[in-house]
Amino acid sequence: MDRLWTDFVNSDYHDWRGGDRSEDRLGKASWQQDFLERWQLNASVPASPEDELSMRNFRNELMALGARLSSGASLTDIEKQWLNGVMEAGHVRRTLTTIDQGLKLQLVAVETGWHQVMAEVAADFATTLVEEKAAGFGSVIIRIVAGCFMMIPEAEHRSTVMIRCVEI
Image (cartoon, rainbow, N blue to C red; front, side, top):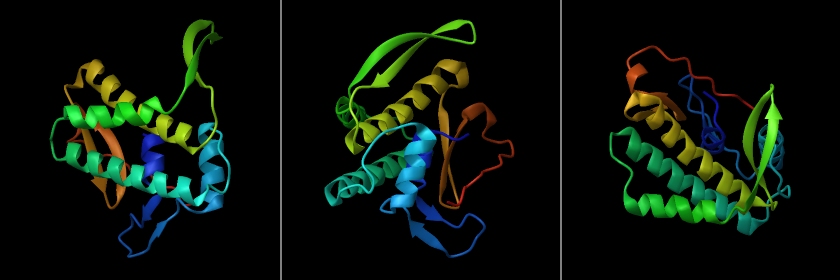
């Protein structure tokens, strides 16, 4: 399942086929542009050195949190506070829209920039945890397979899962 947060974390690329090739794509303008277009986000490209450092630190923290949760640990209050702090940097407005003849409440980013992007990434991570829990799976298994992050419901963690790592 492609998610905003896994796409961001997987910018630290590792060859999932078993090779020793790895690449940190976060600082590449081409990866930044593709990422923003894919997820319909707005920020300046290339990111400033300060923004790039913030994104690396955020990615490292999110990777560490994902790895910790994948070992079966529960989200701590400190980790919730950290996620809330990152999300707080992003400002949104609520908009009621009609999609496929149904109503949907959308959160639309008010600002542009990499701090807004990181807030959206953190919100997607948090949303993934909440949605999977609410769906009745009990908990979410975060798998780290050959350097790629993915999420699957606990009820499916024993089934075979195809992982797609996209090279840009």
